[in-house]
Image 1: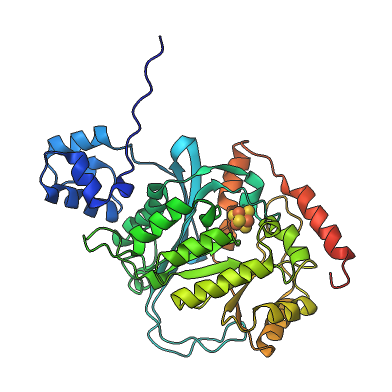
Image 2 (image 1 turned 120 degrees about the vertical axis):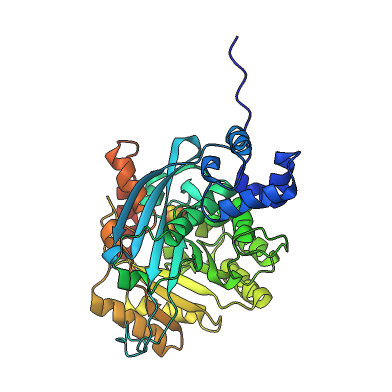
Length: 410
Ligand code: SF4
C-alpha cells in the first residue's frame, strides 16, 4: 500500500495575523504578530526568525512550507534594474523585477519623449510581480504567451515576490555605488502587477495580494503600501475589472489595448473576442467612475502592425474623453517573434498624433531591456536553455503580420 499523501501546508502569507495565531494554537498572540512582521520583511525561513524561541522556530518549520529558492538573479541599467527568477509550487519558476529610481534633488533634467523637463522627486522602488506561471492569453508578441499556461500562483507566491525585493532593499544587497544607494528608498514604494500572467485570470490571488499589500484591516497586518502605489494590469477581462472596482481601493488600472479596433485587437489580444472594445471601454468608464482613479492604457508599438499615424488617430478617437493616460511601449525583441519596435521617428509621430488630438501620452523606456525585462522574457530564456519549452509564436506572428499587411493602413 502506498503512503498517504503529505498534508498540504498552509500559505503563511494568506493566513494573516489571525490565521497565524490559530496555527500556533497555545502561543500568545504576540508570537503570531512577530512571525507576521518577519514575513513582511521578507524573512520566511523560521530558522531566521531570531526573536522566537528555538522550539517555536522548529515547530514552524514543520507547519509551514519550505521557503522557495531564488533560481537566478540578473541586473541591468547600472544595477538599477534587478530581475529574479523565483521557485514556486509544482516545480515552476516565476520572475519579478525591481526597478529603482534614485531621488532627484533638483530640476533641470532633460525632457523625455517630448515631455517636460524632469522635476525634483523622491526615490522610488517599484516591484513588478507575476501572478501566473506562464499565461493562457496567447498574445502573439509576448514571450510568456509562448510558454503557455502552467499554473496559478497562490496569494503567498505573489506577495513573496515583493517581500524578497523588500529584503534586498532593506539590507542594501544591491551592488550599487554608495552615492546612488543613498538616493534610494529602503522600502518598496510601488507594486505593479505586470509580470508573467494575466492578473485578473487569477482573481482571488490578485485581489488577496492587493489587499495584503495595500489594505487597511486595522490589525497591523499587510505591507502598508498606499493603494495609489499599486497598479494592476489587464488585457481586458471585464468581470475582473468589476471585481477590482468592488474592492473600494483607489488602485490604478492599466489596460493593455495594443490596437485601435476590434479587428486587429482580435489578433493581437485574443481575449478581445470574448470582451470586445465597446464592452471593455464601458467597464473602464465604470471603474473610473467608482474609484476616481485615472486609467492607463498600455500600447506596445510594433513596426508595420499597429504603429501607423492613421492608427494613432483612431486610437485617439477611441480613448479621448476617458481621461486616460496612454503609455506607448516600443516592442522589446522577443525570442522567436519576428516583430520589432518602429523607428524613433515613427514612435514620436505616433506620440505627437495622440497629443495633438488631446490625449495624454508618453513613450515608456523599457527598463532592463538588456536583461530581457519585458514581460516573461527571463523565463523564456531560462526555459529554452533548459529545454523545457519550444517557442510557438512564430506561426501566430506570421499570421498577424500577413493580415496587417493586407489592411489598407497596415
Ligand atoms: S501580454 Fe500579458 S496577457 Fe498577453 S500572453 Fe503575455 S502575459 Fe499573457
